[in-house]
Structures are given as structure tokens and as C-alpha cells.
Image (cartoon, rainbow, N blue to C red; front, side, top):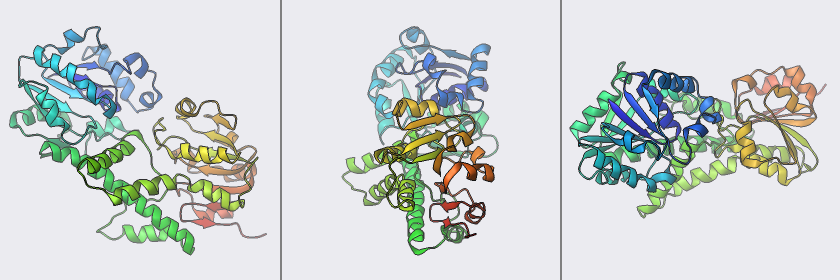
Length: 434
């Protein structure tokens, strides 16, 4: 099939790579704000397993053609069967001119796939811009950062918002290569698909925030929250997924979807006290490691140095959008704390966000170097390289033998046996006196 993909989101890059891989003739028109020359150097794209290599191979084979806005745009609009939109919410207002040109260039029967995070009801509006020459379907973006290729090519499900049988058949054919193991399409009305995507992330965020509230209560009561998590997860009505307490969630898509859901609630005249609480708990949790540090040193923080392992909002990505580390850094710097931060991927993104701060040193090589001269270590992102440190080496570098585990990846008893004070999220242990 002849497919035009427009956008510079991760979903656009993944769709371009995957659809051209299975034989479709793909034209990719990145958004003018982020042309291919910029995308090709983006750390978040380079860190995605297989994706950049697949894009380069598709270009070399001729199955993927990259064009820039304005250069050969008129040529790439002609004779398309499917238009795939993967735009950010801020680019919503720029779609109309492109679709108007497409409608004029198309002989008819065009299918518009809305893969963007737009307001509920936007897919219906996009169809009106096609001027009767096609149908628009909603296919919410379910890509997971850090494993984008796998989640597209081996999907667990696709939410297909579609009100036309012909458009459904076209989308099914477009994605047939990725729908062989089992039926992954869930067809529903377009607005239902758009709202379902937002509702899923709202539910996941609610589970995380609820678990974080329980972890805070466990801290106050002297209870190890891991026992509580295991007990809750063993209930078949609850399960274990998204029950891990931590120091807050971030990410461009997850956070953006929650804000979009809040906007939908507000626009409908319904105030969601629950969603407001979820967002508030998450922002509050981003400061939890700072508060634990404050408590341990009784508020005497000025002039101290701490090490941080992890800046990315989750392992496997180079992005720091809404990441807990940003809130943590602001809190530490406000108290005059010097920070030595290590991350294997996200250092360029972090420096682009916070600049060359006088209280910040960054490292992307040996993580133990970041711990030299530090009184404490804060674990913020659970990169696999951090899971099993050289404990004697780590202990020797931490002046006050304090480990603050923002992801509960360590065993408190084991850490304490190494001579370190352990403070997790709803968990704690201290070394036995000599």
C-alpha cells in the first residue's frame, strides 16, 4: 500500500520503519519543527533498539522515502492510499492545510489514521477536512518507549476507532503482518477508542499513586511495604502489575495523556477529584528522596554532596520529560547540595534542560565515579547496570553510608549487611551496630 506518514513523534518513526519493512511503499514527511536531520541525531531515537538501523535499511532499499516540508511535498501528497498522522497535541492546529492539499490530490477513498494524542472527538473533525474524499479512523498510540519496535511489530492489542467497514478493511490490510499470532484489533466507535487510550493510562497512574500512598503509610507505621504489595498482588482481582511504589512517574506520553484526560473532564463540565489527586500524589512523590535525605541529616544539607544514579524517566530511553529527577534536582539545589549524577543515556537531554549548573557534575561512564566524595546515593532510574553493584566499592565511596532507593530494587537486609543505611519507598533498614 502507498502510505504517507506525517509527524516527528516516536510513533511516526516506528510506523515508518515497520510499515516499510513489510513491503508497503512509505513516504515519511517529518514535522517541519523537527526535520529528519534533527531526528537522526536525537538521542531518544538512537537509543531505541533496532529502530534507527531499520530506518536506514528501508531508505537504502527504497521502500522508505523521506521528504521535507515544502521541498517535494506536492509530489508526496499525490496518489496516497493511507495517511498516518503522528503529531504532538501542540501541532493539532497545523493539520488542516495538509489535509486540504491531500483531499485535492487524492482521487478519493483515502483512509486517514489518527495516531496522535488529540482531544476526544478530533478524529471525526479530521474526517471533515478530507472533504468527502475518505474516512478517518482512530488508532491510539500504544508505543512503549525503550521497546517501540517490539510493541509495534508484536502488539498485544490495537484500539481501532472506526465507523466504516471499508476503512476497517484497509487498516487491517495495512497492519496484517503484525496481526498473525492472534486477533489484536478491538474495534469500537472513534470517540470510544480515543477515550479508552486516555482511560487506560489514567487507571495505571491511579494504581501507581495508590501504591505510593500505601508506601507512605507503611513508612509511618514501620511496615515493610513489600509484604503489602505481595499480599495485594496475590488477590486475583488486583494482580501485580503497576503495584510498584517509587519516586514518581514521568515520560512524554504517560504524563501528556493524563493531562489530556484532565482536559477532557474539564471540557465536559465534570471535575475529576480522583484524577487531580493522582496527579498531585505523583508530583509530591517526586520529592520523596529529598525528604528522606532531609530527615536523615535533620535538615542540615547545605554544602553536602550526593550522588544520583539515573535521570531518564524510565530505563531504556534517553528522555527526561516530566522525569522525577528534575524535581529532585531543584529541591537539592535550593538547599545548596552539590550533585554528581550518572546516567548511561540521558545526560545530553538533562543538560539541554537544566544547563551547566554550578552544583551539577554529570557522568555517563563508570557509575562509581559519580559516588566519589558523596555522602549518599540516590537511585532514581532502575537501569539494569545499577541492580547489582559492587557493594564494598560502593560503600567505600559513600561518606555517610546512606542509600536512598527510589525504585525499591534492592533488598534492605542485604544492603544493611553491607554496612549501609537503606531508605526505600515504604522500606528501610540500618546496619547492625559493631
